[in-house]
Amino acid sequence: MREVVVGLGACGIAAGGIPVYDRLKELIDPQKDQAVLKQTGCVGMCYREVLVEVREQGKRTLYGDVTKERVDRIVEEHLRAGKVIEEWKVGEENEVLAKQKRIVLRNCGKIDPFSLDEYLGVGGYQALVKVLNELKPEQIIAIIAESGLRGRGGAGFPTGTKWKYAAAAKDQHKYVVCNADEGDPGAFMDRSVLEGDPHSILEGMAIAGAAIGADHGYIYARAEYPHAVRRLRHAIGQAEEKGYLGNNILGKGFNFSIRLKEGAGAFVCGEETALIASIEGRRGMPRVRPPFPVDSGLWGHPTCINNVETLANVPWIIINGAKAFNIFGTGNSKGTKVFALAGKIKRGGLVEVPMGISINEVIYDIGGGTISGKPFKAVQMGGPSGGCIPAALGDTPVDYEKITATGAIMGSGGMVVMDTDTCMVDVARFFLNFTQNESCGKCTFCRIGTKRMLEILERICAGKGEEKDLLTLAELAEQIKSSSLCGLGQTAPNPVLTTILYFRDEYQAHIKDKKCPAKVCGALVDYVINSELCTGCGLCLKACESGAISGEKKKPHLIDPSKCIKCSKCITVCRQGAVEKR
Image 1 (cartoon, one colour):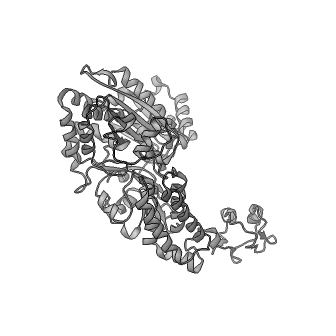
Image 2 (cartoon, rainbow, N blue to C red):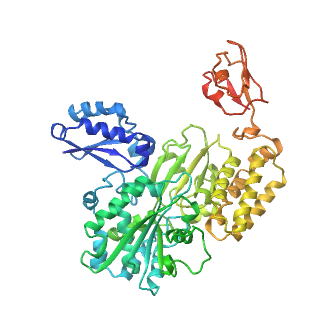
Image 3 (cartoon, rainbow, N blue to C red):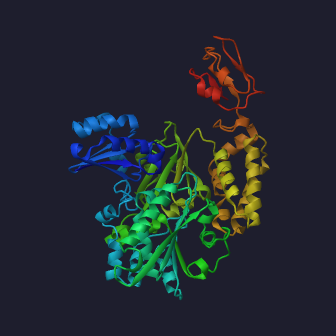
């Protein structure tokens, strides 16, 4: 029996996956067509969604950019006439996957996330069986430690060490918490794993529970991920029904239950002590450490917190061994890393690469370069807590130490690509605006210091910057980094510091020349109509809501800069390319 599989991760659904699935359901007759319809999560090639895969006799055909209107032809020609539609096939799949190594994403895009049977069919829960039948807690921890797995949430703390500390804590009640509060702009790694392979997270948490002696777990997921939340709830119910969660798991006397807590979207709740406060029903605000959560966490009991990607690695490591994992990567950065490629990238989506691969390899060989075709300028890594790495450092290996040395951080895995049309001052303003809004307000330096920095950046973007502003930004940045309580404040200045370091000339142009080289900052850009290209068609005049454009039909038009609100509608509608930014 053939399988027709539709990608229904959030990216696939957003691209129109539900109408595609429904139309296939209408047309496919299991008996007549000898085919069954299935769904799966994100395969990673988000830029080609909706993706429909036909699997038959060991052969698979992947169609990209599928719409409801294309479904009929796929059914008639491929399923019923046996003819592959070559022009709709995804031809670059092998090129995209060539430099990837999929451990965390091993099941994403392959199995139905709602099917426990399919998870079991690819070896699911065998790691938990092995742990309960063959390994003592200290042996589990030793395997994870030997693998070199470090926390994939951003800090990079050795996972085996964290588990060792939690196991050593003397308390009859312990907790395992999965941090799924993914809030970085441009990041969607955890969401895709939760949507595409939820049982791998449950299995990883249960193994962590067996290792440290915990009997309860929490998944803290943001409510803005409704598909992930729904699939997690379904998976938890299945695992409880089949005896992989609950009391006396697999008859081995091990008890472990998991509850799901939906967060309200506060970025600061990604910080572990703020996350704990939120689960407990208090306002999500960080507290002073020590004590660390492994000693006193949820309701005062030892708590081991790992993020989604970290936990998804665990079952694979238990089954395949520590050495199979740490053959990938560099000295202190072992295994693979999942990245969300976003921004001005041709092949946006999700990738998983061995540690040590260069930034250029990810951007060009996997991502296909910039979508505009213009030169790659910089990449923002680590989200608002990270920094901007210039194209000149594109050969930098992706590992914790090398990335940190650039002034950025590995972070959870967001990788926002920028081309030469990007204003780096505006990028710094955007990320600082985000962290300033998300500050919980507990620390004076974070609450007020980021506000003062943001005001300076807004002045610079408005053409009112002064030479002393750069010195003030640097001074404020150091004070905020050294005086803030949690990672949000400690890393908030990073985008500003790295853009000043690598793109100081752009700041100087904004301050001294009152110009934005990338022509992004509206106050420093003039909109003009090139009289040699303008045909007087009148489209720009009709689109201009401020009445700034005037001119007679079939004669060059003019823009009154005093009335222009710089909305860019004139550029959008002009068919001659006559409207320019200067």
